[in-house]
Image (cartoon, rainbow, N blue to C red):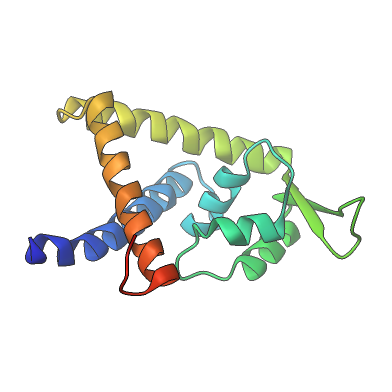
Length: 153
């Protein structure tokens, strides 16, 4: 069990990096050269919403990247619109421009195609649900350890 358990973090990290590679490949295929895979993931996670930068940072999907830098770069390149939130001028809300929405649509198509390809490899909806349940349980285990130390609840 220990050997398999120790492989989990490495596998999770490799999967995350591979997913970023998938996004980079799609960017290249559609001729987008001014942003990278992490920035495409950021755009995809914002989606149709208007969201505060703080909320994006707290979601924590951006392993090894600087969200503030990427937000500034995406804004400078015309992918994001920023505006102060009405209730707190110090907080900024970001939303996608039409230029970014085109990229997000393409990324979603790739995700749909990869979901079909994954199911063709024998992974059905129940399997994916099971994988997600197990990964959420692992996340809870690690969170409990962080919050409660060795006395995991």
